[in-house]
Amino acid sequence: MHEFAFKNNELYCEDIKIAEIAKRVRTPFYLYSYKTLIDHYRKIKNAFRTIRPLICFSVKSNSNLAVLRALIRNGAGLDIVSGGELYRARLAGCDPKRIVYAGVGKRRDEIEDAIRFGILFFNVESEEELEEIQNAAFRLKKKVNAAIRINPDVIPRTHAYIATGKGETKFGLDFETVHKIFNTGWKYPNVNIGGVHIHIGSQILDASPFEKAIKKVLVFLKECNIKISYFNIGGGLGIVYSIENPQTAKSFARKILPLLKRSGLKLILEPGRFISGNSGVLITKVIYTKITPRKKFIIVDSGMSELIRPSLYEAYHKIVPVKVPRNSSETAEKIEVVGPICESGDFLGKDRFLPRLVHGDLVAVMGAGAYGFTMSSNYNSRPRPSEVMVIGNKFYVVRRHERYGDLVRGETIPKVLK
Ligand SMILES: *Cc1c(COP(=O)(O)O)cnc(C)c1O
Image 1 (cartoon, rainbow, N blue to C red):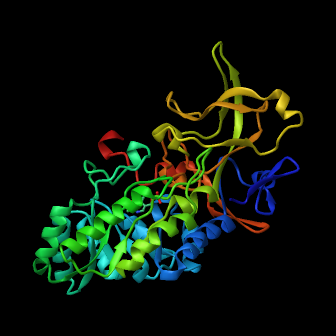
Image 2: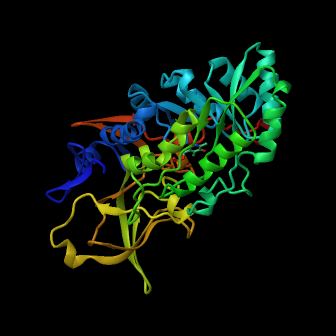
Image 3: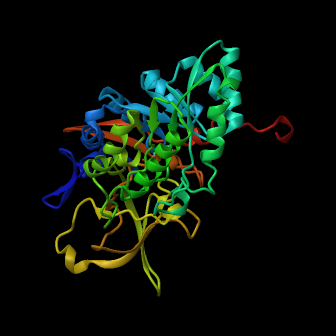
């Protein structure tokens, strides 16, 4: 469920007509619904409430400060993967004891910053990283917490680029190495290795690969007699983009809770897409229509620089007109929605049936709240769009669109070239 719905053939976000927002904010822009965001956070929180887990929202799915702040105010922690995300977490006012930090390539300075800030856990992805954390903690005279990320070697059914729990990916460590680390914990006197972590992939529609991975890890902990207090099961819950039928938070919890309850471990979850995905849309405007002998195109004012998911993952995003024209069903035609970028891979939707649209019409690209703005770029020297949040009947520009000056910020021409 989400708060983008038609009333009298006009698309609303919560209680505001999107067309009204577009009169005051130039397109393209991302539009987020506060209510949808919080509803989805609460769905997970409530589903697991009997064991009071720590829910760390995955910052990389949507890192806008207002989005982070909204979730933090409602009790969420954060899952970060870089020093830049740590910086955002601090600005958004996140309690450091509710931050966990994953990623295979944490740099020394990033590790030091996170130690100084006092985060809850590093999710460690290699032995060398663990040594780096030990050395940094020693220099800073601190004792830090770490969880070891295990690669459980399960194969979730999702796009290859977002499957992270297979043996051949770069993520986490194999069971044998993890065992060795727990046996040689004394080598890391400044690190309390108090948890394990898995994150098997993204947009996973049913609980079985999670169950499989969790069971594998629990058996491993028992067989090796490893005593820890936290089990971080990552994120990855899938959402509806078109005709998917994903598990609900409730049905997911029903399967996972019994496993965790028996273990007595404190649970951490890192949902990203599940919370932010359907909380955001990309609003874009038709610039031209074009008919070629083979196809009809509508060319809109955003493309892979604003939303790369269709190009990168062949992801499907529903596209709807912001105002449905009268007799729309009769004029519906098969079209390709493309952007202005100079790449043939630059499209938002292929083979779509949309009512006849003309220059100036607005369309909404649905389900763009996760991995939308955060994966946007300045390719083709396009300033990045603004982000807007709706709360009830008010809207707030939570990031202004970039200007041309922002494109060249930090660039200089060497004197010899002048
Ligand atoms: C990306 C990521 C997540 C969030 O994944 P979603 O599919 O958006 O829920 C959680 N944990 C880690 C370690 C990640 O890298």
